[in-house]
Image (cartoon, rainbow, N blue to C red; front, side):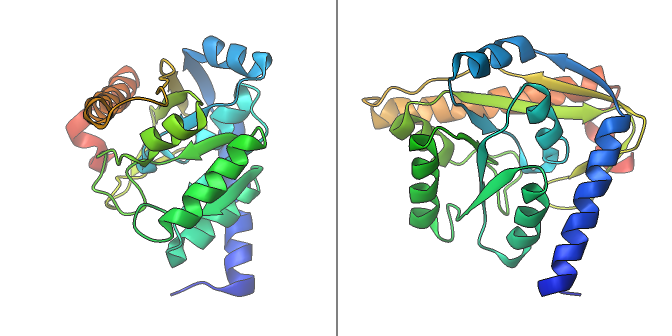
Length: 228
């Protein structure tokens, strides 16, 4: 059933309440968070980069490092409206667009957010995959804005990994949860196209390895995600 209008708003509100309740029940662990907190303390905006399938706990993880002002790039696809409304309850301001639909509109909105001092957030394999294949837009955004890309992921000891294209992980209440923050990556404005391709490959591999490492530390076998 396609949700619209009032029903969509109600579902988004309920989803946000559920995620907040689950987040407050988790036994959190963090790695690499201190350097990201230091960036916030210094007033340095960042670009959060995370896989689409690991979206569920990123808003809570962002709040835990002191983040407050953030704009997230969300597809203009009809499913994107529901995600945008859920994220709004966490304080995320949506910029609509993607690499496939509304690309120019999305880029302008994110650049405007950077000029206004916002953090930016993007799922570089969204909105429809392929799963964990990084599109170049996040690197171009970093080159245009001068902001560092901060890869982040989470895993949970107990949770459900859905059979969707992104293998969306939904944590169960009371689970152990681990958030891994990666090393910030800066892209110089004069970086040539050939080097951008190499950096794209490096960031994709870093983010895949980061997600796999988080799953291993939480006891989630890489090939058994769909069964848990």
